[in-house]
Amino acid sequence: MRAWAGLCLTTVLAGLAYSLAYLFNEHFLSFTRFADGVNWIYLPSGLRLTLVLVFGAPAALGIAWSSMLLALWPYGWDNWPQALVTGLISGGAPWIALLLCRRLLGLQADLAGLQARTLLMMSLIFAITSAALHQAWYGWSQPAAGRALQFAVMTLGDLAGTLLVLYLGYWILKKTAPRL
Image 1: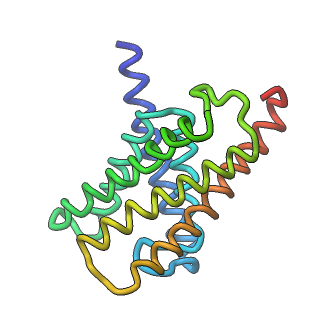
Image 2: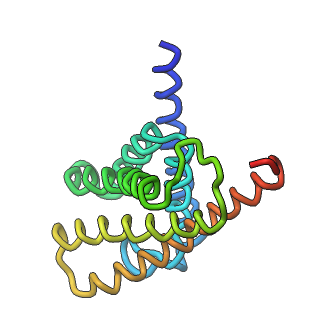
């Protein structure tokens, strides 16, 4: 029972952390918006990958429900299919990237031996995965011109946000726990 409570708490806290990062980005970095849902710098992407790297599937689930609720917020329940898929992509993309990184980069589950180069490669894999899934969905559900450009900008924005968050976290870990 205690393990179940811990998983639930992790899910809720990851969702809240993602929501706060999203609201921070919307408020303080709104000048980086390129198009609806596409930013030149998107810090929540870095938090998504970090949370999933550290807490795994419960974090991915928390990010998914949080993203779904954030997508419902401005439009209400009339937009629930769009919000549901967007939420699943937001939580699923870092999980997929984590699985790819374990396979392609030999990333260990306990993150042992994590190096700056590995963080760079993970960030790139995640940014491409996230942008590709989001833009494929948006392209199918809301066809519009310029999806290739939005994919490129979203990839760069997710990469910038992910690198900022991951390298800040990496730097903090190296300063506080130099044996890692």
